[in-house]
Amino acid sequence: MDPETVQVVICGGGSAGLTAAIWLARFGIDFKILERRPGPLEIGQADGVQCRTVEIFENLGISDALLKEAYHVMEVAFWSPDEQGQLKRKHVAPDTKVGLSHQPHVILNQARINEMMLQEMIRLRGNGSSGVVYNSQVESVRILDNACDYPVEVVALQNGVPFRYRAKYAIGCDGAHSTVRKSLGFNMVGDSSDSVWGVMDVFPDTNFPDIRKKAMLNSNAGNLMIIPREGDELVRFYIELPGKTAREVTEQDLIDKVKRIFYPYTLDASCVVWWSAYVIGQRIADHFTKDFRIFLTGDACHTHSPKAGQGMNVSLQDGFNIGWKMAHVLTGRAPPSVLETYVLERQQTAQQLIDFDRSFSKLFSTEHQKKNGITAAHFRDKFVQAGQYTAGMATKYSSSVLTCPSHDDGILASGLSVGMRFPSSPAVRLSDAKPVHLNKALPADGRWHLLVFCSGDEATNKLTQVASQLEEMVQMFTPFGAPADEIINPTLVIRGERKSLEIEKLPEFFFPKTGRYMLRNLHRVFVDEQNPYMLDCGRVFSTFGIDAGRGAIIIVRPDLCKLLPIPAISAV
Image: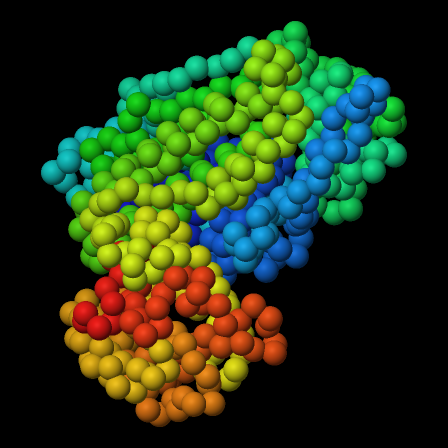
């Protein structure tokens, strides 16, 4: 049988694969997702959605359902024995530092999250098809001939029948036991510990007062982490199980251990939805790509403990990173060399995750706590200090063709860091006085975003000259006959008062004609002023550390994570 030709084959329909597929579908790129399961995921092991991932869902336009259905993690409670050995609440802290993100940390079953992404992918494809082939077990992936148009061969068993694909690129998203990785001869490097933990989702009948809060329990009977789930009743427990192997753990072992840790509080866990046991380990693939034609993502290239809630999030962000770059290459918007930055950026991120998890997971170990004199207060402090990382806000990419730090960056925008995600802050839309978070004005639709910051005094003088020069630059990258904002999305943020500004006196560059009827878009100009409809307005310039008198220009990548150099308006 002749192979089926497709531009991209995605091996695995988990978080990384679906996120990459959304990008490809958005650009109309032909792809197939080969998924070994007989259908969509029904019960997911992952459930924590960090703030950064919620921001990504917002950029993709699918955050509303997530925020509506999920449990919102607001606080974390720390419990440990008092002087009499009785379990007591010792401290309560915000789960995420206030102001770190405009989006919360939420909890929702991975199966439902995947369903949301699958629905968005189907919508973008527009033909009622998801592109997912179920009951498809990948057998091998290899490069036949780099000189041909479709150099990658993927062989899969579909309902037991061999099937071949030829593709320009392949993405391995097939988990910790990745066939793609093994086909390429790549190895996982790292180690595992003797520390065994159990996890279970349960409907608990208990008098423990913080059962609907994220909670850390360090009792004389062991360690336990509580993660409330979506709805009003379901809870996840992570339970330390010293002296056991993962293979010999039973459901009753988990229940009995939780009861001992909870004492003197009671627990009836008769309804257990799901449980498992695992050994903590941290491993990373020795290679993330083969000839920049086949790429590994997610658990296929990094594995770690679930303590910090990073697994699904980092995997999803792997897919988010490779997806837009591959889409740009396949549509001619970027050279193939851009794909090299996936390895540079995500391999670095994965190694940082492994290093963090190795240290962070030890904090939960009773043996480690005893050996190193770690008190409940020390554990609490370390947990709080790790908040920026666990929220997904600490990722910083190194210099590359896409991320170019300059020694002037801190002077121009001291609140921003080149190589990190672009933070959001509310501003007032000039056309209708509506308060809008800037993140909502920067959709993840494949465009680059060009943000100009200036004072109201310069809005009709220096800005005219700046806009003219920027327009010339934008036209260089815009295909003939395409809307002016097809490739680069211009946005203007003015420090001042709306009543002193007149739309008709602002440069037309910031009002491109868009949409079906090619009308002037009035939604790209914002004012940084206080607003009675949203209390946090009026802080954009101070939050970003921009001097309104000097101004700044910020270029944001399509994945909304990083910044390019920020020249002052006066230097343009």
